[in-house]
Image (cartoon, rainbow, N blue to C red; front, top):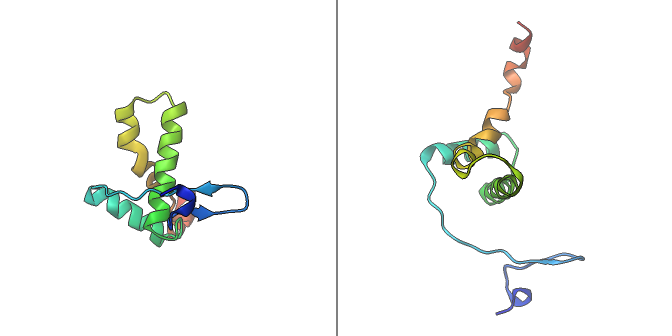
Length: 94
């Protein structure tokens, strides 16, 4: 089956993007971090969150100076660490 014929191919006016589905095992901590990002409204769902976070990680791997191990350790927690609790913003000036 060609990508164009695949039911998982996302069509746009400019290009066809093929999506591959696979299973990955994540730690409970990473799952919680992803769920928290979704609850905060950073992503609509798990598929979107994982796709974007993986894309960011691959991009960083191509251009970054960090070793693969350092990148792997920080990939999913970086987005969570950068988040600021809106309820805690008033306490920053204290």
